Length: 63
Length: 364
Ligand SMILES: [Cu+2]
Image 1 (cartoon, helix red, strand yellow):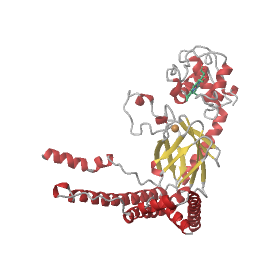
Image 2 (image 1 turned 135 degrees about the vertical axis):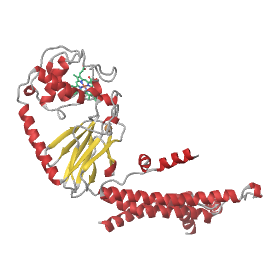
Image 3 (image 1 turned 90 degrees about the vertical axis):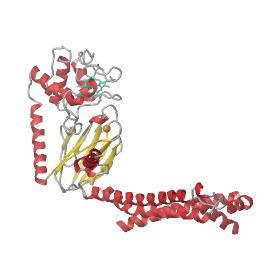
Image 4 (image 1 turned 180 degrees about the vertical axis):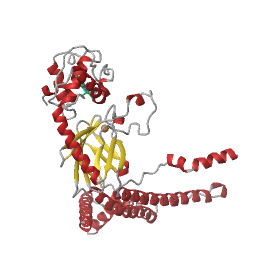
C-alpha cells in the first residue's frame, strides 16, 4: 500500500513539475516500474475527468 | 533646449497621439467592448506581475551586488519555494480563465440571429449571400489602379474600399457563416472584434449587433496569395428602415438585370462594358494590358483560347478550369458581364477576332 501512495504522490509532483531530490532517490531505489505506469495512467484519467467535470459545471452554471 | 521641449510637447499633443494609437480599439458593439475590457484586465494583471517580478529581481541584484561583498549561496533545492512559485501562477491563470470563459461563451453564442449571411472568401474578393433574402453579390477592391502604382495620390481609404459593401441592419443580431472557395482566408473587422478564418469545406460562425449606423472597414488577415492585400472588407451598417429600402432596391436591381440579359447589344456597347468588367475582375491576374504574368497567368493577347472558337472561350470563363487559379465566373458575373468581357477580350488587348456574343447566348 505504501509503495502505491508514494507512487501516486510522485506522479502528482511530476504533474506540478516539482520534486525533492530525496523523493527522487527513494523512487529510483525502491520504486517499481509497473506501479508508476498504473499510477500515471490513473492520475491522467483522474485529471481528464476533473477537467471534463469542471467544464460541465461551468456550462450548467452559464446556461 | 526649448526646441527639444516644443518637439516633445507637440509629440504629446492629441493628433500625434491618435496616430500613435497602439492599443486595440474598443469597437462599436457590446461584445467588442466586452472583449476590450477583458483585454485590458489581463493586460493590467500582466503589468502588475511584471513590475513585481522585475522589481524584486532588480532590487536583489542591486542590493546584493559583489562590490558590497555579497557571496553566492550554493544550494540544490527548496521544494517549498518551488511549489509556491508554481502554484501561485497556476491560481492566477485559472482566475483569468473565469472572465475569459464568460466572454468566449458570448462570442460563440450565435443563436437566435435576425439575419444570416454566408461569407465566402475567393482569390481575391469576398462573396456575401443573404440566406433569407435571395441576395448574393461579390465585393471587389475599388481602389483605382493609378493610386496603387503611385500615379496619383492615395485617398484616405486606400485599399480599404470596395465596389459593393456588405450591408447589415443596426441593432439586429447578424450571424455570419464564414467559409472559402479556394484557399484559407480570414474575415476581419477590428471595430466588430470579429476575426474568423474562412476555410474551404468548413463553416465558422461569428455574430455582430452594431448599435450605430456607419461604415466599418477591415481586411483579409490570412495570407492567401498574390493579391491578399487587395481584398478588403467594408461593412455598411444602416438603420432598420434604410436596410429594408436597400433590400428592396437589391431585388429590383436583380429583376432589371434579368431584363437586360435578353436585350440585344451592339459590339461597341459590349466592348465598352467589357473593359470595365475586365479591369475589375480579370486584370488582377491577366494584367490590365492583357499580357498576363509568364509562368503564372497566361496572356489574353494572342491567347489560343481568346482568339479561337468562341464557345471554348465562353466556357473557360463560365466554368473556370478546375485545379488552376482560373475560377468559374458564372456566380460572380451576370450574363451581360460575361458576354461583354468575352467580346472585349476578342476585340481589344491586341486581339482582333471580330466576332461577339449576346448575353442571351450565355449558358450558365
Ligand atoms: Cu484572402
